[in-house]
Image (cartoon, rainbow, N blue to C red; front, top):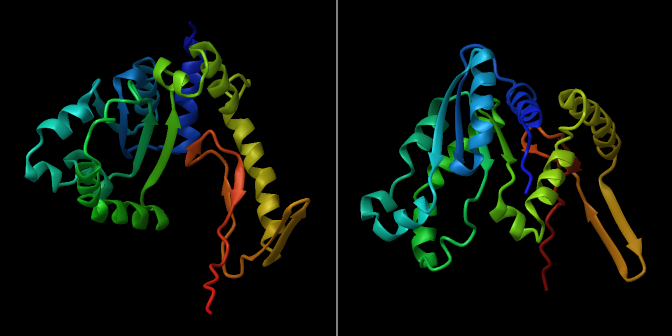
Length: 242
């Protein structure tokens, strides 16, 4: 088995702190993850502190979500998680490290319970997106390799770790420089695509046409999702009438 080594973990912590979240002195930041990310947390904490930020950690233990759904009262189901809500309302940044300890712990939970709890967080999620769109809340989502996640991808932990390291360009001398260069290249693609509003993809068995008039092309350069590396938009919706 092989996980991320110390040097790679330190590079990851620096990339998340400085490139993805651009933390500066006085910034408040909430880090949400599980105990599976523990090897990354101390280096990340140190890097954020050196940047002058004030990090707060919300760390779930194994089967915490299952325990919640099996035991929570109506009040808990109808409320957004307190720390998350507080951060969305006033923090400067938020980092979610997606590290499932087990991907099956909620398999037996009634979907209606999950939906009800998600619905209770709708107002908080709306505020999250509004603050993000206004530039008041910076956020990023990343992953850390675990056995559970590796199995979901039909990989060994060593293979999955290499996959993440390569995807995040953590083996480069300066991952941040690599991501900035990628962002610059993709910015040119955004500029090119933004000149057009009608697109057609045609090949054997495929002929798709759509409009992007009034839409915005996005440069997904790893700041919001690490790793990433794409440009995207959404087509104009056409409602057919008969």
